[in-house]
Image (cartoon, rainbow, N blue to C red; front, side, top):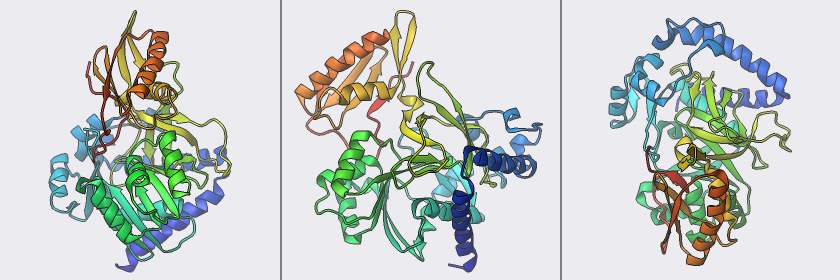
Length: 418
């Protein structure tokens, strides 16, 4: 490894740690973001084809974009003008287009996206990630279990960090065997994998840090995983769109507002859930400006005991795709996944895993491993739906084992499309 990329990572680590000391209040964060956004609008954005004819003096004057628009005009949103077709082709041969790195989402939710970063940005990402997850620089053996590898992670495979990637497509038993052989002190994996290791992983892994990534971390999963490993589970909120949040040592997820500006929409009137619109002012190769995410977040109104002014998240509740659309007396009733999950888990203390899938306009399939628990969950769901005015038949399915695969786990899911 040359000195230059090491320096980029170290500089990003130092900058992130310095900002954690400088940004003491919400006003400090707002002032910092205003300066970074002004620079983005003046320097980087005009060089992107999509924004060359856009005249805006502030962020609010720019259009809100989404994944469909980004992917349909991918070359217009990145400086090297890499097309989506060229990006997908590059992923088959190492993920490089010239001196740029191309990556993609896992596609486990059925809608893959691309991103383009420079070599410098790759190392800056590493430095920022390490600063937020390991404030004290020290050697670490990291086991990373995900459905897809990335050149981002390759940056962490040298120096102080010894990272080994385990492909979920190999199956959980094979991954568990490799992880035990590595004997890591840091474990990063989706909650379903951490749960599986807790329940079936054999001898207890002696880890100092456990990070949950790539999926929604349910409170019940957190309780079981923390009880098994004896450490606080910390979430990493990251997507194709970038690094969006990292939990502090108290286990509270904080948004990366030192790198990203967050705006919010309320997709379901009357619900506390919000959908973020992000502007990442740390990226220059690809524009991620006023990008509407597909996630459902519950903001935490009270400050975290850690003292950080970065916005705390009470819970990542799921995705817009997980909203159930059920018929009601005056039209469609939209039901958020947290309402369904809370009713099911609260029905029986023994329920720690389930699946609830909307399979038709007015049909839900509830899957559990115990018939009494399933009947209790169904009995709890029915009055909740009636109170909302939603009309749905709940079909109960009892399975010996609920599937755990490389596909992203969504306990509440809408497979029926209106």
